[in-house]
Image (cartoon, rainbow, N blue to C red; front, side):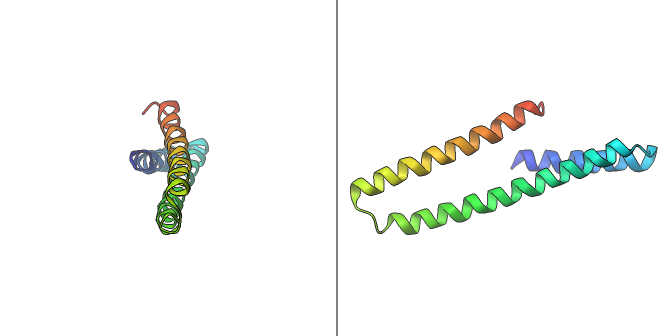
Amino acid sequence: MELIKQLREEAERLSAHSLDRGVQEAGIAANLASQAADALEQMEAVMTRLSDMSVDVAVHLTGDERRAFGRVVNDADAIIRESVSRSDIREGA
């Protein structure tokens, strides 16, 4: 995920800035960027796991149930992707 890569790079840059100049705020920002990247990686892992589980569940559903379940999964995926996209916009990516 591009946002995770950007957060990791920004964390490194801010951490170096903090060490070079002794700027406490840059160190705090570096920690926050790193924590945000960690959280996004965890969310990505959970999404993958849920996707795998949804395939297992869908096997046991009838045609109409499977279609309804697919719509719910697709809607949830769209909401998550939109949320990440908005994060990219706020960060100026």
